[in-house]
Image (cartoon, rainbow, N blue to C red; front, side, top):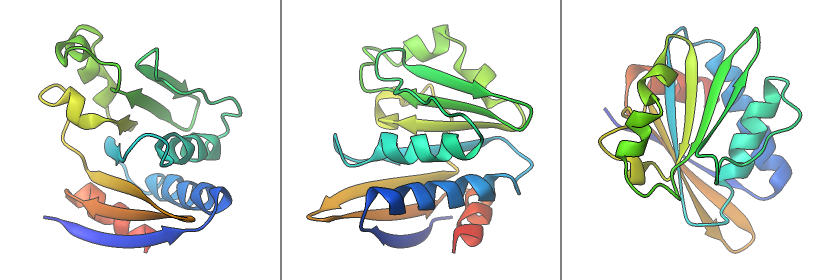
Length: 155
């Protein structure tokens, strides 16, 4: 199952708006959710993740580049933002208990997922971001029923 939606975002505020819309859609899913954020350095993966996390009321959102994962937990949500860019071995994810982050109702936002291959859960949704001069192009692919539900809500 691969259902694709393509969007163009022309500003950082549009990226935040999209991230808020996606986060709002996750409230309709009664399941764990895994979203891969793909793209080159500097295309807006972390900006999108920040907007998503801030939707849930977390003011201070920091990049997990050096810590590998930052978790955001309140009475509404459990979000785990991973950045696998500095991962030297995918096995490190197993040592840190990656499977525990997949509990019912948890959301994983994973940057550089290909570097954690074999240890991370398959994506429900993949968002590939490319930089096209003054805009960001998003290619959003649903890989599961959960991903399809999110994509339908976004669209």
